[in-house]
Image (cartoon, rainbow, N blue to C red; front, side, top):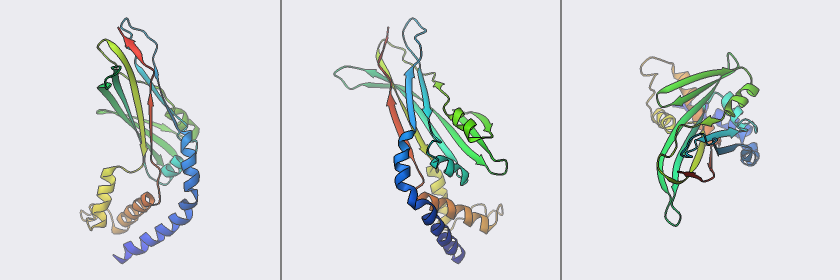
Length: 223
């Protein structure tokens, strides 16, 4: 496809000029993003305290904000695991809770959409400024997952931050191999499909950021 080759070349050149010089600084600035997990106050007779998870400074270094403004969604995947401490034995995994937060920038309205997805429930919120968005992302989640048996326990929390999912990449691969999807069904024109597919693919190759953080709570006793 001559049109695809020319578009790929143009976008690649722009990305090399625009993104390559900042890679070292981005890697250093990634330390500003923090994840914490603490124990909620002991409010029950058993001592089975709930975990409270909070992330901070996601937008501090600017790279995730740049990704959003380029038109790509940012996905925050949180997971909290319950572990039983067994002394000299291997610790025992008991259960976990997961949820996603998906961020999008809407350029026409110049606002940010935040989708919180927990199981089959979705909550949408909108923010007009980056300050408001940053404050919302620092929300502390008290997670409804805790041990039910006696013993010594702790929680681990992880946060994975990414741009394109595996399904996005698989769709793009099919596109590059000749499956035009919506074009073949008459839902969009070739130019739009080529532009979107090539741009997203080349942004990925140019080093779009991904980040994974893991933390552990203090140990507590369930009576």
